[in-house]
Length: 154
Ligand SMILES: [Fe+2]
Ligand SMILES: [Fe+2]
Image (cartoon, rainbow, N blue to C red; front, side):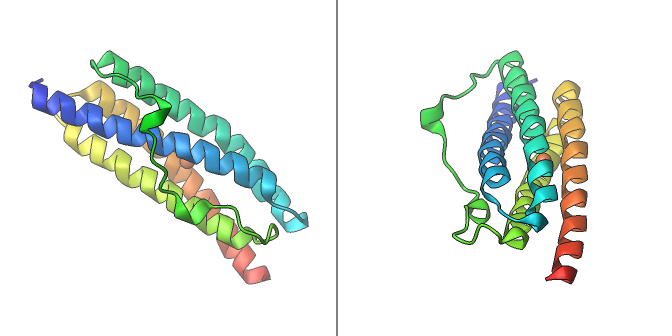
C-alpha cells in the first residue's frame, strides 16, 4: 500500500470513529431525556444502540492503530449532529427518530466511502466497514419503521 493511500484510509477511519463517538453521546442523551409512554420503545432501542455504536468505535480504533495511525484524543473532537440535540419538548419522539435516521445515514455514507477507497488495497479495513455498514443499515431500517408508525399516530 502506498503511503498516501494508507493516510487516506486512516483519515477516513478517523472520520468514522468520531461519528461513532458522537452517536454514542447523542443516543445516550436521547435515550435518557425522552418522556412518555410513546417514548419507551425508542428509549430502549437507543439505549441498546449505545453499546453497538461504542463497539463500532472500538473496532475503528483498533484498525486505526493496526494500519499505523494514532487514535486521536478528545481535544480533536468536533461535533456535527445538529439534528440530535435534545429538544425542550421531551415528548417530541418524532424529532429524535428523524435525528437518528440522519445519524445512521451519515454513518452509512461514510462506511460506503471507506469500502470504495479500500477496494483492491486493504481488504481487512473493507471487511470491517462492511460489517459496521450492515449494522447501520439495520438501525436505519428499524427507525424508518418507527417513523412510519409514529407519524401515523401523531
Ligand atoms: Fe455505528
Ligand atoms: Fe447505528
